[in-house]
Structures are given as structure tokens and as C-alpha cells.
Image (cartoon, rainbow, N blue to C red; front, top):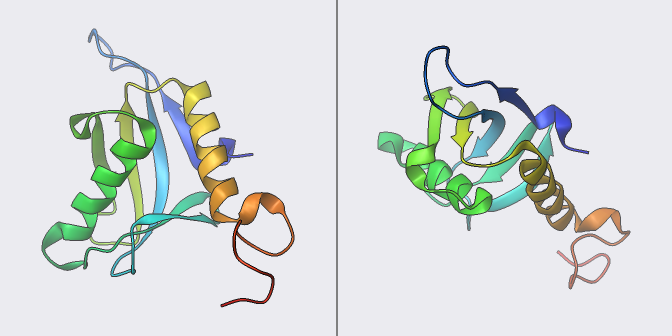
Length: 127
């Protein structure tokens, strides 16, 4: 279950805004490819190909999360952790139930769906 990876944030008082989720993310910059790689405590672990210099890893994380959640990049905002691996992203335009489903699928795919032997397509013991 992924309920501990995010909080639901109500709309700002006096705004006609929408409910948002605040997703905790542990970012590993400079990876071979950008992908969800599982969990890191109470955060979603994301590897990004971009280096950490000049905010490129933050931008890559934002773009990846927008694609993962099926929203526009403008709906994904880095709210904390600009210079840290531990980050929080505020995401609008996704229902909490949809976020749970998407995150469950991404974590399961990254970890082989809980099946022995690792990710699908990889023989047991292969590196």
C-alpha cells in the first residue's frame, strides 16, 4: 500500500482551487534512466538521468512525476527539498484514489510486483 507516500491537501482557503496531493519523493540523480525504483522509507524512490547541477534533476523529477500522474508539468510544484534528495511535490489534477492506483502500480512494477526473482523479464540471479 502507498497511502504513506503522500498527504491530501485541501484547497487553499478563499480560493476556487482544487484538492492536491503532496508526494514525498527520494530522488537519485545521475541514474542511467529515469524511472520509479521502489520506495525509500515513506517516500517514492525515483531515479533521474539528469545530474543534480543547476536544478536539472529537480526539473527532470517534476517532468517525470507529471507524466506518471497524467497531469501537466504546471500542475506539479516542488514545495521543499530543492537541494536535497528528499523532496515534496504538490500535485493537482489527480484524485487521491487515482494517485494510489498509479503509485501502487509504479512501485509494484519497480519491485517486480512482489514476485520472487525481481522485476519481470529478469531471470533470477541476473544482474
